[in-house]
Length: 95
Image 1 (spheres, rainbow, N blue to C red):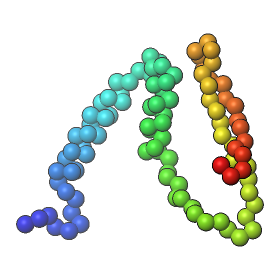
Image 2 (image 1 turned 90 degrees about the vertical axis):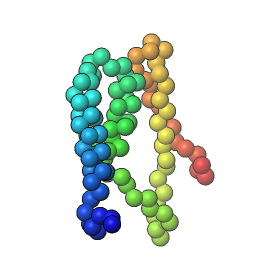
Image 3 (image 1 turned 120 degrees about the vertical axis):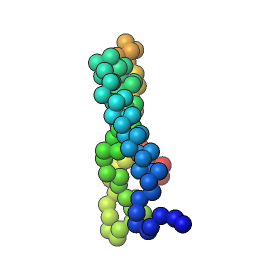
Image 4 (image 1 turned 180 degrees about the horizontal axis):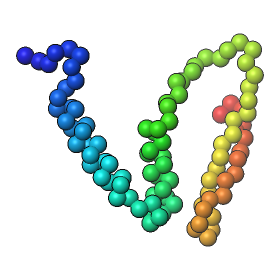
């Protein structure tokens, strides 16, 4: 005898609730002022996955579409160790 269709799995709900409680506790204990720049960037990288909507992949070309050059931002750590230098480069055609 399984669960009724449309009714959430009780065990999954309990696990999600406990995990949410643990995550809330951990996040509330983070002291951002003591984090390194690398740690802050990693936290943003992970967190934004859950905050920003995911874009759909669009394939195929539309008729009469004009092409835009594609740019790549290259980040290099400054010699002083504080911050980054960012250089924007245009990718060659066919890449």
